[in-house]
Amino acid sequence: MHRGSCLCGAVTFELHGEPSMVSHCHCSMCRKGHGAAFATYLSIEKAKVRFLSGEDQLTSYNSSSSILRKFCRTCGSNVEWSGHPDYPDWVSIPLALLDTPLVPEAIEQFYAEARVPWCAFT
Ligand SMILES: [Zn+2]
Ligand SMILES: [Zn+2]
Image 1: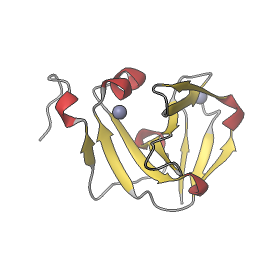
Image 2: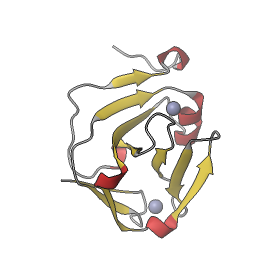
Image 3: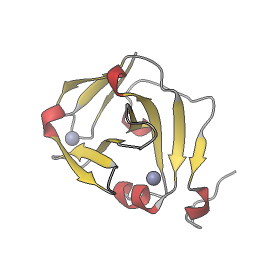
């Protein structure tokens, strides 16, 4: 089982199951939301995510009509986004929140055409 937490520790959660996908998202919304060249997410069914603490500390922002991004109101850590029209029962969580080791076998690239020129990939 994997466990994760936000920067301040108020939000903690467990994953009851393995993520089905890990991806780098290079879109401008993830870039700005994370303040980073790209964001790396694990994707998992919502039903497999259990918050142990701090779910009431989450605040949210609709970055588009369907996509809802949630983050810790104290420390600002991105905690999840959901609302993909094709995957309404799924949630994406930043891989970097995990406190347990998870090394994905493969990482998908989304919006690779939007990637910043100052971060090289091999
Ligand atoms: Zn926090
Ligand atoms: Zn994105």
